[in-house]
Image (cartoon, rainbow, N blue to C red; front, side, top):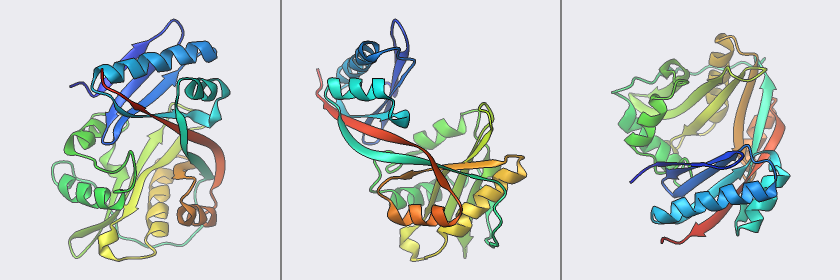
Length: 244
């Protein structure tokens, strides 16, 4: 069963990616609401042909054309996601032992921690080795920027960074960050974030970025304390697609 579906239209394109909770849909290049609706409907038809399931569409920066199209084909607004940014470096004192991820060694431990930390999350929870290997195959993947914090040989937390060199200005992203809830450790979020931002700045990047769920008040408070501000807000829309 395919994990990725590509849909081309007269103008623009759509893509549906299989995720643990169903499907994630993206639409690019839609010129108007009618065009966006046609692309969305084609994507939903493709998902239906593959057995259906919950489909989630991210509308970047609340784009009006795509927002109207999503509502028009039956999507319902689910949640918001803020993109936060701040200049680098960060003028803050921190201390935390981290090491790079070792491909072929750290996958199982990381998957256990990630899936415990994000068991509530519709996209980041329930990852498999296949999900990890897909990221490892991406041209942006760099194990040196995938930072692990261990205590007594046990993985406790991580900060996975990502560099965006194809935008202006270039961005360094905190891609995924978490602390193992089973470890019972508190206060590691700040040092892990600072470790990631320090790594990105040492790669020559002057602007840091991350995404945070609009309902995650504790994380928003932490990032506000670290000097992040909202750059824009994306909105997730969902629809249950029946099989056909």
